[in-house]
Length: 326
Figure 1 (cartoon, helix red, strand yellow):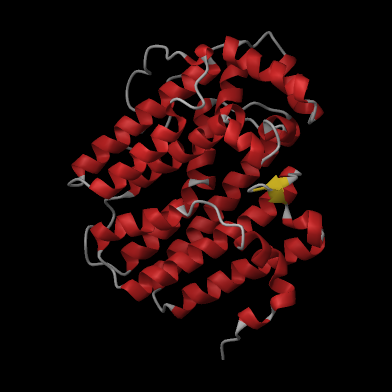
Figure 2 (cartoon, rainbow, N blue to C red):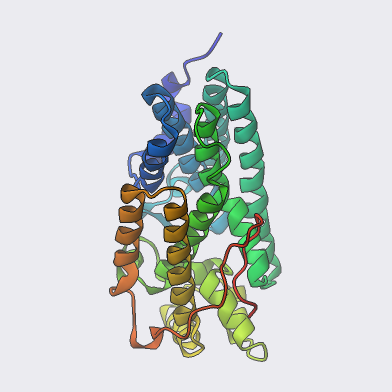
């Protein structure tokens, strides 16, 4: 007999807290967009949206603990209010609520997708933490594999579960979903270090404080292997705004933000080409244009002038994705 978990309000309080402060629901928009191709019933779409939303918000509770974050969407992180033990237990509890809801859908293929992609998500998160805590800068290929696990996992979970209920075009969307995951993560990496709006909703250049090897940071480390200042700043987990400002200026001088913008432009072009190959999708193309416009001018400094674009495609015919070697 199924249990109504929604009545356990005291146990779900950290989850309800973060859910009451929602993000931009881009994942929900993507689910709606892909359903124009897959055409599954509305009740299944809503169930998958709930599952993905639960997993996403629960993962944010854990991420904020693992990263030592102070703010999430402009408000104090949940564990700063409810404590680490309660917040961590709530996140794990919600993972299993999502699993139960997936099981209720009574579709073995959807359940297999759920399990596979949660494993991928945690593997990718583990790699990210390992590099941070050992202060080992990954290669671009390693970063790409991590993103396809960590960020791509939830994207593929949503589309894969939808495909399990569809008779249309199964297996055609893997490349597009992986390209979208890379675009979203690299865009977020850029915004974290370059957006004034982001600085108001999170702490200034939080990726530097967390010691995270984001896309612009790993480029800068590899671009000047004899210069250890950025690695030392990452080790210190600094909250000093002057030190972080120096790190940003150093990355800009090495062309790291320009390189990141070039990578994003190439990914956007590849996403557009893949959408066209799948028959076109005006709504998804419009979403990409909107996301790109948000970073096109507001976060560009004079030092972000674009170098020549990377050669080749970021995503080969296989599942792995890699930009040009640094």
